[in-house]
Length: 207
Image 1: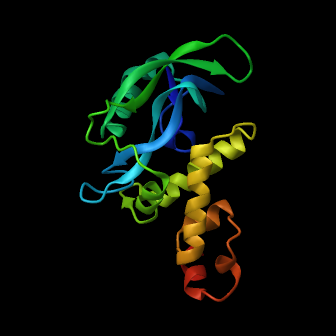
Image 2: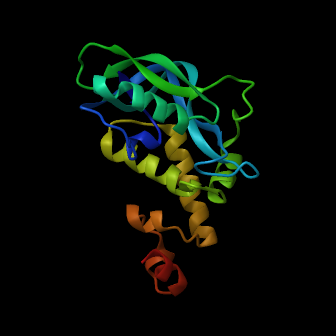
Image 3: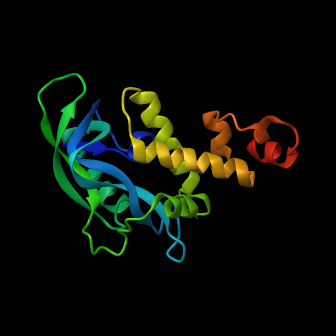
């Protein structure tokens, strides 16, 4: 079984795989249009996660993981549980970066337009939600910034206007509000207040 990762699977795979390759799916784009009532938010205050949205001419870069045959059943059950909040398992065609033959793989995608977890929104609303949300997997800010960092490092040739636009807005808001989140330090964002000495409480929390 092949699985396509385009969100947290890029840095937190947590299942066995024997091959990983970079590439893209076509006819879809990545959007922060999925509500997260568990991993990056709560039922009362859901955060935001990415999903794939159909768009003619669109592409979404990610990783294809080949799961060993002996681990398929267990991995499928694990992913079904991990992506239980509004995602369904679908099949798309993956185009490897190395130019080899495209092939079908599994992907978790928003259930439908009337899914209660599906929330197409303007970027300002998305950013306001991300900056203030937290779930049992961590802050929503960590999720968004790690995703942008992974795509930039793993695929410097990729231009993801939505993802990187959200990242820019988040970093600007972090600067304005002096947000204290360890991910800013871990990734190495050069925000003046993190290193200026003017906010020692920030540095203590990030240490």
